[in-house]
Length: 411
Ligand code: NCD
Ligand code: ZN
Ligand code: ZN
Image (cartoon, rainbow, N blue to C red; front, side, top):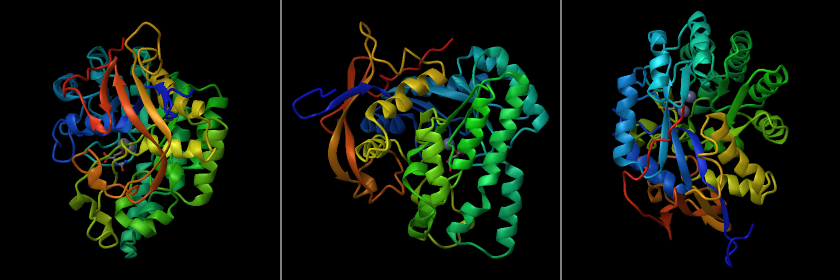
C-alpha cells in the first residue's frame, strides 16, 4: 500500500456523486470549469452535478445543455441527475434516454426553484423510474414540518443561526426517509438518500435495508466533522440544508452510518455561493435570509484522511465509500471506482501524513470558496489526480486542458 519512498498511497479515483456545479445559469457562483478544477485539486476524478440550476434540469434539452457545457470545459469526468417535479413525470423515459445518471426529487424547499411533487406524484414517478432501471435520490427533508417551524421561529423573533438548524429538525429528515422507504417498498424502485445528516435518519435507512428495500445513503464530511456548536462559532458560514446536528446525532451517525454500515457513500454536497449570499461580513445578523450550502471539493479527501489518521476508518473502508461504492450505487462501476488492469484507469495519489491547515479560503480553486472548514487542520491531502491515464493535478497545480473531462456513459 505504500507507493513510493515518500509514503504516498495510490487509490482508485475518488467519485463525488453530489456537487452543485451551478451551470447552466448560475455561473456567478460556479461553473463546470471551476467546479472540476476544484475537483482535480481535491483528488476527485468523477463528479455528478445536481439539477437545481437555471433552468432546472427537468427536460431533455436542459440535460443536453448541461452535458454540452461540461464537455466544453470540464477537467475531470462528470455526470448529471435529472430532477422530477410535479410537471415532468411524462418526460422520465426521455430523460433516461438522454443519458441522465439518475433522478432527483427535492422533498422540502431548498436552494433554487424546485417545489416538491405531491406524495401521489412521487409514487407515480417511482413507478416510471423503476422501469428505467435507474435510481431515484432525495433531498430528504419534510418541507411541511420545516415551513411550520420556520414560520413559528420567525414570528417568535428567534434569529440566531443556531435556530435555523432547529427550524429544520431531525424529525423532518427522519420522517422523509421513512416515508420514501415505504413508497419504495410498495413500488420496487431503487432509492438513495442524499446528504444524511443525523443518526436518526441513518437508523431509518438501516431499518429500510433490513426490510429488503434497495435504499442506499450518503453522508458528507461536514456532518461527521462538526457539531451544531459550529453555528455559534461561524454562524451563516456553516449554514447548510440539512443542518449540522448536535453531538448525540453526530455520534449516532458515526455508529449506525459508518461503523454499522447504513451509509454507503461519502460525497461533498459542494454548494458554492458568493460571500455576499453567505453573509460572511455579518455571520450572526439577520440570518433568516442567508443562503445554505458551502464548498467542499478540496477538503473532502483531507477530512476523510484525517478520520483515517484518527483511526475512525481504515483506508480501505474510506476508499470503498468514496470510490467503488458510489460508482456501484449510480451504475458507473467498474468504468469508475476501480483500478482495472489494462484500461486507462482513474486514480488519486494521497499523502496520508501531510499536515496542513486551510489558512485562507482564497487558496481554493472554486469561484466562491466560503466554507466552515476554513481554519481547520488536516492530516492527509491529495498530491496527484489522474483521469483516464492523464494527470489533471500534480505538484500542487491543476494541469491538463479544460474540456478533457467527459461525460460518463451509462446504459
Ligand atoms: C444546496 C445548494 O446550495 O444548492 N444547499 C445546501 O444547503 N445543501 C441545496 C441542496 O443540496 O439541497
Ligand atoms: Zn439537498
Ligand atoms: Zn446538495
